[in-house]
Length: 116
Length: 112
Image (cartoon, rainbow over all chains, first blue to last red; front, side, top):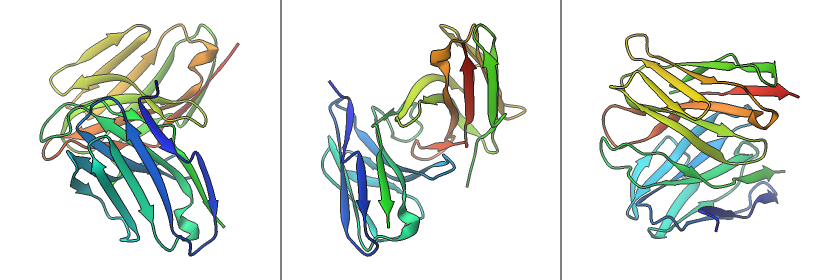
C-alpha cells in the first residue's frame, strides 16, 4: 500500500490556469507538508499542517492555497499559474511535527508541474 | 534561508568503494536527517541523528555529527550500483515547530 500518494504525477498546463494537486497519507500521521523542488534539486518547504491547522507558511505567493479537509489529506491549489511555478511538488507527512518534536518525514512520489 | 550545504555536489565511485558526503549548516538544530532521492522519485528517509548524539549507524550507513563545527557526514560503505541517487541532509531547527530545511544534495554515481 502506498504510504503517501499524490495525484497527478505529471501536470502540463498553460500560464494563467488554475490547477490542484492532491495528497493523501494512510500512515495516521498528524502533520503534512508541501515542498517545492526546483530544477537544481533545491527542496524548499512551502506549507505545513498539523491536525488540519496551518502551522508553517513560508514566503509563498498567495496564489498557492493549501487545504486540509482532514488529517489524511492536504491538497494544494494554485491560481493563475506562472512559468516560474514549474517544478516538482512533493507532499510529505510525519507523526510528530509539534514544537521540539523529532520527526522523520515520509514523502510522496512528487508531481511534476510544467507551465507553458 | 538555506541551511544545509552538502559537499561534494557530485561524487563518482566504483562498486565496493566507500562514499563520504559532508553537510554543513548554520543555526542550532534539534536533529539532522539524511535522505536519499532516486531519479524521478520522492525522498526516502535514511537516518536521523539528534543534537546530543555524535555518531549513528544503520546497516552500511554511518553518520557523524559535530555540533561545534555545525557539520555532519554520511558514509556509505561497500557501495553498490543501487546506491546511485542524490543524498540530502536536512536540519530540524532547535526551536519552534519542527520543520526540515534541506541542502542542495550530493549526487552519487556508483559504477559497476
